[in-house]
Length: 253
Image (tube, rainbow, N blue to C red):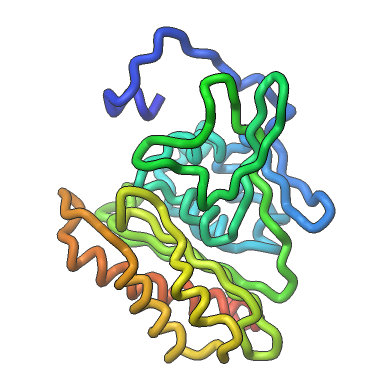
């Protein structure tokens, strides 16, 4: 429906999948959190299980659209819309989530970082459907999402999500996902590689933010010029990392 509203799609046939209740769930399966593709935004926002492991979901859901959209929209729909300013795609990239895709004859998985194939394009085939998102459980990790928008509930001018996993005060692992600063969502692997093994300090997070600034490729549009979006990529990445580390230490809810 969002694609039709944007005049980007004119399908001859629409199939209503709202009654696929078996695809609406949030649960732990072994060492992962499994989220059904038909799980509503409001359910992600209210989930105590997600909040326990990844506060980034609650951060992001609080700034997605409005209550009407959050009550009807789904995580699968958000991923498949593939808007370059989509919030949950940046969350998936930051957390190195996996997308489960199913056809009548096979099931395959694709890394969230490889799921989108350009603006409004995905790797889902014409006879396939997204059924699930899987997120690894990382003990000792904190996560956060930072977004700047023109008005509440609007698409992002820029946004960054992150997780930081600590051992003592050193970064064991981390993930950084950005949105609205390029033709597609992307993960800043250069910043991730830089942080691993280093103390979780403001100085190191600032360097990672600069690496995100350098790696992004925003376009000037009605939401802002290129330089401003690059500035936001740096600042929001730095903030998301700092909040993630604070949550990993138990200093912030």
